[in-house]
Length: 392
Ligand code: HEM
Image 1: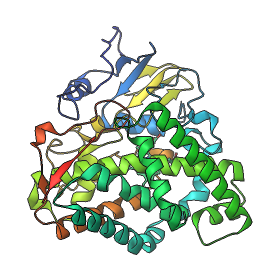
Image 2: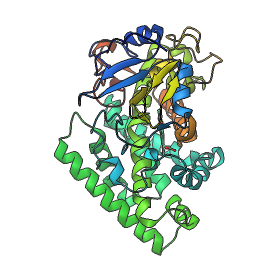
Image 3: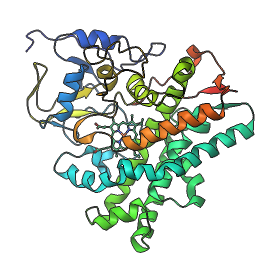
C-alpha cells in the first residue's frame, strides 16, 4: 500500500490532437498504485491501467457494475437513452446473481454456430452497402455510408426486424449515436421512437411467435415482456457505435499498413490496437478491496482502461506496433469477466467480412484527406472517427 497521497490526473483523459491511446497512459502504468482522477461532477475515482490489474478489477466480487450504487463513476450521459437504471432488462448494469439470468438466456444467441448461420445475411448487407457507395460516385464518408449502417442492419437482422422497417431502424439508430450532427432533442426523439418500436415488436412476437431472437428469448420464460425492451435496446446500443468505430479505425490502419490487407489476423489486432471501448467498463467498489497492492474503499469509483491494458508492455510485446502476427491473444477490448462482450463472435465475423469485401471490391480505396486531418472522437465514452472521407 502506498503511504503518500497520489497525484490526481486531469479528466477527460483524451486531449484533441494527441495520439490514442494517450501517451500519458504509459506514465500512469509506471506509477506505483492506482491513479486518481476527478470527474466533471467532482467525484474522485481510480484509474486502472495495467493489464493484470484491469483483469483483477473486472473479476472482483467486491466490485460492482451497478450504476445505481453510490459512488458509481457516471462519466457521461451521451448514450441518448433514458438513464440505464430506469430500463428493466439493461443487464450490463446488474451484478450476479441478477445478471446471470439474462446472460444464460442470451448466450445461445451468440454462439459461433449461430453467428455462422448469419454469415450470408451479413455478406449481403455489406455487399449492398458497397454497391450503393459505388453507384453514388467515387468518394464517400465511410462512417456514415458504411461503418454505421453495417452493424445497425446486422442487428436488425439479428432481432428479426422486418425488411420494410429497416430504413426507419437504421436512421433512428444513426441519429442516436451521431453526437456531432444531431441535436440532443433529435437524439431524445430517436431514442423514444426506437423504444416505442421495440416495445411494439416484442408485443407482436409475444402474440405471433416467429423464428427469431425475440421469440426464442420470450420462450425461455426467464425474461419478461417488459424486460425484453431493455435487453434489445442494450443489444442495439452496445453493438452499434462500438462496431462502427472499430470498422472505421481498422480501415484507416489497413490503408496505412496495406501488407496486412487480406490477412484475417488483422481483425483481432484492430480490436486490441484501437480498443475503442476504453471507457466502457465502469465500476464501483462495494467492499474495501485491494487491487495491485492498493486499497480501494467501498463506495469509490473505478475505471479500468481497456486501451491502457491493451498497450501494456508487460502483457504485449511492442504494444504500440500494429502487428496482426503477434501471438498474444489476451486483450481486454471486449472487457473481461462476467460482463465480457456478448457480441464478440458476431463482431469478429462482421469485421472479417467487412475488411475482406471492402478491399476486394474497392482495391483502389484511399483516404481523401491527410490522416492527421481525420476527425477523431475525443469526447464521449468511445474512441473512433466522426467521419472518414475516402475515394477510389
Ligand atoms: C459488453 C466492447 C460489439 C453486445 C461489452 C463490454 C465491452 C464491449 C468492453 C463490457 C462492458 C463492461 O464491462 O461493463 C465491444 C466492442 C464491440 C462490441 C469493442 C465492437 C467492436 C458488440 C455487439 C453486440 C454487443 C455487436 C451485440 C449485438 C454486448 C452486450 C454486453 C457487451 C449485450 C453486455 C454483456 C453483459 O453485461 O453480460 N462490449 N462490444 N457488443 N456487449 Fe459488446
